[in-house]
Length: 106
Ligand code: SF4
Ligand code: F3S
Image (cartoon, rainbow, N blue to C red):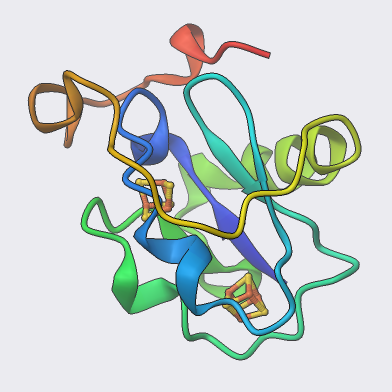
């Protein structure tokens, strides 16, 4: 499956959700996740993310491996999202800041 990682937090651009053929994105207050059981590995979402926060599970940077579990867990909890909306207000400012996991709102 594909995985949403750290740099989505506090940005949430949502370009990714529009292209997913199986609508498997789920939305929290300041982050999105992919349901790994629904993702068909089409790779369409990866280039859409302006924050480059989406990776194939096989190509995850080492420090992002924890996001596999975070995506699986929160996809069970959060509502589905299929339409793009405005990014979070300070998205441009937060884009590229490291270690945003501490700010994840569940
Ligand atoms: Fe959806 Fe394809 Fe991205 Fe999986 S890889 S989340 S199926 S767009
Ligand atoms: Fe997040 Fe990128 Fe989608 S910032 S909401 S993974 S377009």
